Image (cartoon, rainbow, N blue to C red; front, side):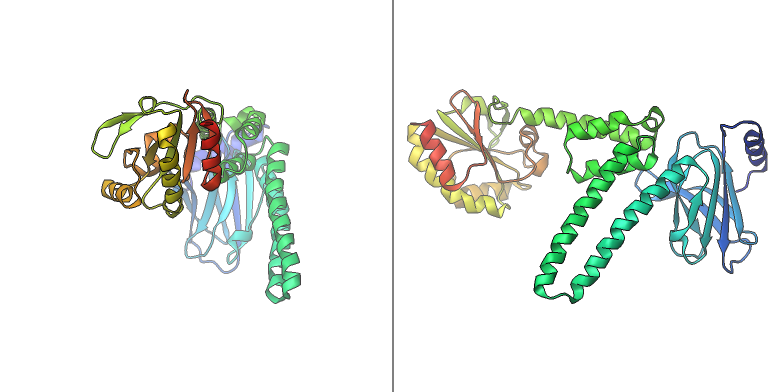
Length: 371
């Protein structure tokens, strides 16, 4: 609701201080809109669902929100009974909103630095999107040869779009949209931790204080820990030791079952590629077990009965462990395994000498290690 006292306070601040301590968002909606129509100012809540921040009403096509927003944050404007919404970065200062009532998504937002930066990003992003849309339309009517060329052009546009986002983040460390884009870049898992950390370090102190940047800092710390843990499962590293329950509840420890060569094999009954590879692993085991090859299977199954049945069905006559926790299995996390099949080949000292060998490559490496 409009808060008269707060409105007067904000106006007085604007009048005597070049650094505003509150915001005034004034809206202009074109089109026939009934007086008293509600306008909602929202932001994303803990579950990424819009939650109300403030409400006002339209009078003669105009509305106003006033308040204080110490750190810039993405907000959304909804109008009762109208489709769509408008994205606005709420920050202290004077913000203007202009839109046709039937086109809220194309509203013009002006008046504060963050909204100008956001508009610049959207302009550049839209230019690439328009080119992609045009290529896609051409593909609908193109012949096979032309379609192949257009497909290559589309791939180039996708790469251009990715590079545009990264370049924007690096070129605008003072922009909230850069922080939000980096959040998306982390989620895509297409960039290395070191590059992401460098981009975060370049953010201005004000941006690092935003809730989005604080969330990114937590994500980067998790990525760092994951990368460091991943190094412990790289070739040349000593394989992390572990103890886990076997099919009958017995505790099995890796270092206690090491052979001259040991294969730590991550698999599951539900994993078709794993099951398809099992006959080859069985053949290698039968040929080289007496010469010093041991295998420790680590199952990422959800159900113990499925795991035990697959062991019997596939004739996997070696040691097995599992917490029956799918990809939440502690051993999988210890070895940084997020996809299966995955396999680590260890020498007699428990040092990882190879990873993810299958078929003839597995047998050849085992034979080499056992001379």
